[in-house]
Image (cartoon, rainbow, N blue to C red; front, side, top):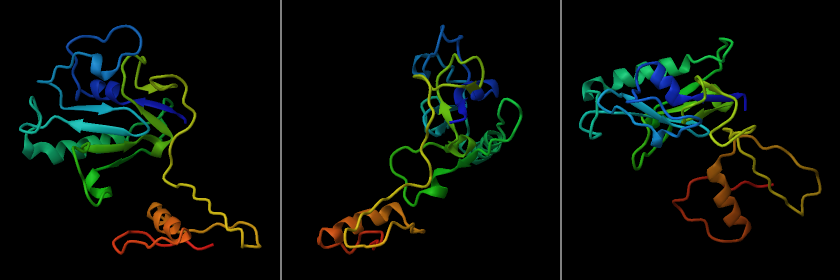
Length: 198
């Protein structure tokens, strides 16, 4: 981890999030600050990636963004978030997604934007009290690791005489059919993914 971006401090600085009063001393989670919802257009959740929510009229009880302005505001935020730099002014390579662009099906209440600060080299910090938009620790202390887009899948075949090898082009959905195949369990016809062979 290179550090953290305090998403709600940034939203506040940019005028998208308005508080009724200054947060208390120390680190204060978003849930414990008094938000002026009638003036707030967006708020964010911390974690390995940022989840940004807009307050839309007719969708949220005190929404401030007219439905006709929704995409404009979302695109505006997407561009501004992607432009966040490190403390020295260097581009950190932030990637911002609209959920419908990355998920084939969306269930529940998705965020309006998904933010990979520094393409996941920086975490999203949702609390207040860090003294700015940059944090060297998350809400609970130091954090030196993060999730990545590429996973690790290790399969041992005792019959294989040669050493290990790397197989490219695998997908997370390949794990289940591979495990079922190794256990000689029929693979459901509607299961996505392919069987990985040693």
